Image 1 (cartoon, helix red, strand yellow):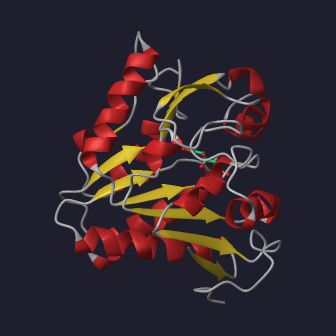
Image 2 (cartoon, helix red, strand yellow):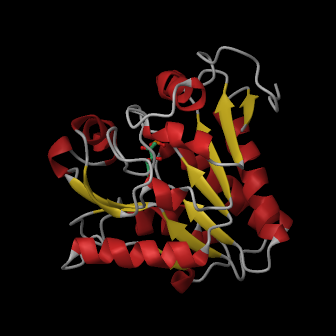
Length: 249
Ligand code: F6R
């Protein structure tokens, strides 16, 4: 695992965007796994800027979402397809049909999750972006999730619903369930890139990077993958015990 510690959130976004750009430029048909959430806003904005200023092209690229709320109106601005559309695909040369995600309004959510799992597995993601929840979740795999799980329908923890209430008009509007890629599915990606910044992420980051691999911290499963980069700002890295190999200042 390579841990990169940079000064602040904008620097972390740039570093993460560098890594995505490298993959997009290196592959003829890049397949990028994308997370949503506040951590990714700056990463996607940087990719948009690179497209507009530097000619970074996403032609031939496919995007695979990590997860989707269950039951949310597909027109809702927080439906993750819309988040990616607004934050990235509307602004670059990425066609609408190159963005894949589970349908959170499918009549049979479990069947939808199985179908999406197969799609992601067959696609073989080149680089999977991950944020980390304040409770150590990745995607919507909450503490207690088996580390080899395939995609499924999950209940969101109260912590996650409280954390995400800031994106909705009230906590009552936050869905209680989601379809998520399972941890086993996520770990099939060729490369994992976890990004975190802010003091509130320091504990889950420490547990994920230095703690035991445990279902209590789903993000600790990244330790099981052979090609992982973690990009942190100084605050998110503040509880790590040592300067890490690969760290930059
Ligand atoms: C979203 C997702 C979540 C977020 C995590 C961090 O697609 O999979 O795991 O990455 O909750 O969210 P932020 O970045 O808002 O702190």
